Image (tube, rainbow, N blue to C red; front, side, top):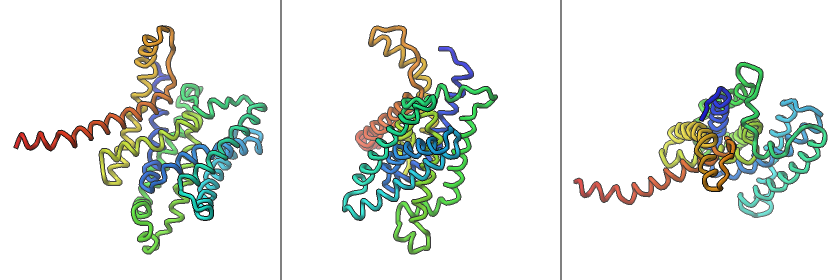
Length: 302
């Protein structure tokens, strides 16, 4: 394995992106709205396409505005469907994001006819290409770092409000905390984070970045601050481990398994998501084994 400067920037970008996604992802999980992250990551796709088609350029601002509006539209419309259609939250989100995602794919196909835009990169990202930049520090690194700092700052400023809105929305409302506005703010931040993550990990893999680190952290801590801390650690570890596996272990193992020894490096973003899942299942199995055997071991020692 030969490690280059490009590998360093891939890991840095992947880590910053995963950590930025983990912050709103924790509060989505605490609000039992993990499906909202899934819905937003799919629903912002038509917002990006419309922003491009209206502006005629790939300038970040119109695409960002379109994506954020699409994310808000998802939250509002799914709430209306849930109340008026008398269906559960998951079903209402499924109706909205499946429809918007299909519309987004159609619009992306239309947009691709006018510009060099690969729908596959939109879906799965192009982390290895995103870090190729003539600047000393790639642009995507600055963007990922900025959204991480923004998310951490907002989480610190509104920590009490987010915590109360997640665990006791009625008490939060009685205390004068606008839980509805908190939810809308969380939706906007999630949409904004998803847009920044699009270039590196795409609209599909960003779901893993939003949900899996927080779900893993809940196996390690019960406090909100602890869950937030461990989610960042898991996101960082999955980025480093994922890229190492993508350029070394996974190609060698797959080459031996398939008999094709000329396999190149695998997708770093895909392996980062897979590594996050691997960490989750490893800790889940370890916790179950500990719950089963630790009490017996303690009795024998005592």
